[in-house]
Image (cartoon, rainbow, N blue to C red; front, side, top):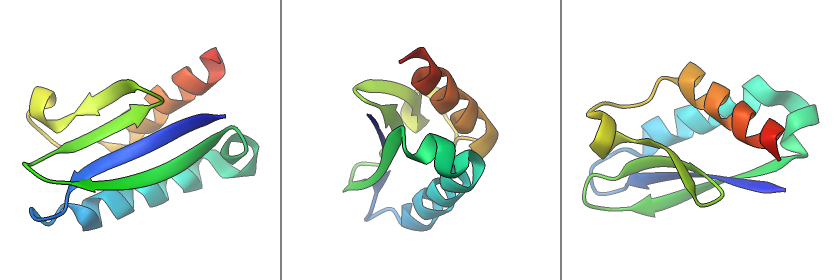
Length: 84
């Protein structure tokens, strides 16, 4: 089973965005995929907003200069999980 982690800056007020993204991920995959991965929210600081599958960063706000679109995160997660 893979771990999907959404890291977000709590002092920056990114928690609602992390929760919305997490909800989108869970709704997109349904039970068939939800048995293949776990979803974790990890508070942080210093402006962080990253999404990881295992140890692999699939999105970084710092590198992209923007927040992720749910569709791009869902597609990246699907690729990572199907690869396993």
